Image (tube, rainbow, N blue to C red; front, side, top):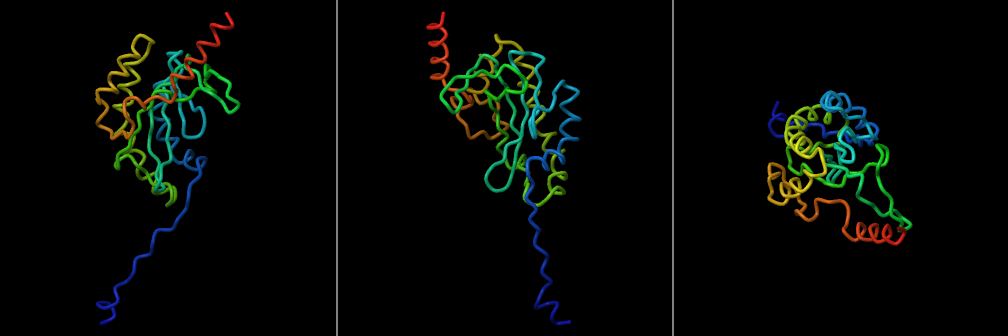
Length: 195
């Protein structure tokens, strides 16, 4: 009996079960698709959904793995008219659903939105619904306010003024883009030379 007081029972540590992107996708897809598919989103690849209804602006929702064994939602916009530089220094465009990439980024970098993927599917499935409830209002607000090219400057102002501050984004206003003016300049210059 005295052993109970002096040697308390140790709880079993959590077992590590690192989930790949494919396994994560299988666990979260039903919850994500129940929210995004009615809005017109389709699966682009594992952990990424895309809506092309407003092309040349495409709305993107994805999940990103971060340090510490967590992943969190990221949403934003993909612009068909923005170039990206590929490995051999050539400029490509992402004008299709398959090639679309996120250009204007909002990260949900707060603790409430982080989901551990190192303790197995139960940990993920237990948190995904709450995370989606937390981020969907902000994501849909951005998507609904940026449906045509003339609305894009307002999105940059929204980002610059920190109106997205309900989420802790570690990116400054100038780093919300995944493209660089130099690539745009090079693409424009090449276009002028060709024409």
